[in-house]
Length: 379
Image 1 (tube, rainbow, N blue to C red):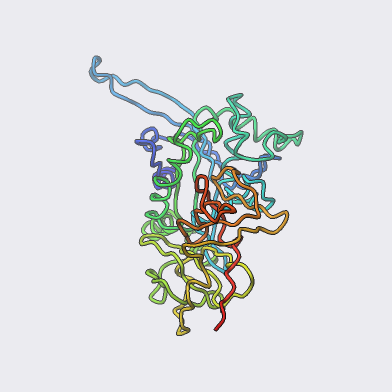
Image 2 (image 1 turned 90 degrees about the horizontal axis):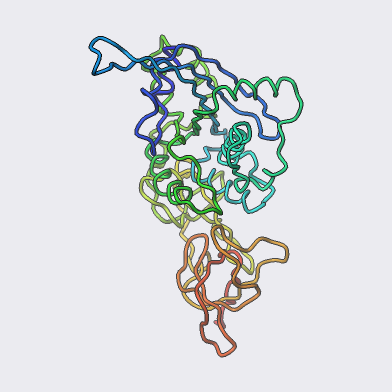
């Protein structure tokens, strides 16, 4: 009980003042690890909590009211790999890509959390969250007896369900992400997005859990052994050689030269592009963990060869490739001549250029890698 209460006390719920009594007063904890829920996916960790809360009655001196409740804590965890750690923002990008019906990203953090929300909504017969997952309308629990037994057990606790993302990121980065991204995206009543139950949605970071385990070794001896054995395949602890602040310029990432195009203070990742990339179009950019970058002595290439600037370009995505950035509505169809009015590291805001060589219509966003580089002029 003590370890469970300590573990749950580390979970942060940014949009809720505090879970009931901070999950203290547990009388029983049932644990299911990697439990399958058929089409709703395997759940990394399920905690089923019996909770007893005693509150003193002001009108009756010395008397206490006892309230017994049940809670389910559904935890989806992501870890680092030997190749690097995938931060909360990268998980979010994978989720948005998947919602855009991209076949990749089905195992990403927010897709799996969305599936578990759908599972709880399904078994409690509450309004569904089909918009979270393109396949949600066809998901079933199935007839497997083990899955059925787990579902029945979860049903007993599902009225008070909490959802936790366990990630290999810093607490500060995740908290900022929740406030700046999760709240605006799901905090409204936009029917197209089906707001998540934000007060019940929280997080825990592997670095925080590791720090607590090391401070209370007698409570967490096996967990500490697990951290030691897996090392950087759980999270990347900061070291003296880790790059924590990166400036725009050239670095080495996995033995390849890259150019940092965007790096915000406080973030653990930044956006880069391959250095010296050739081709008719601007290169694709991607995010990497700052700690995976090594300063390079190579000269920084002219950014005009990597990013579009203000001016006219041909917008010509390859046939069959998705060309609408996340959050945008299709208002224009390529190919078109467009004028960049606001360039970014991954997408740019553009206006259509008419046959009279004038900008027309409202601005819209396009991927930079769908803009054709200008041909070099005569020397």
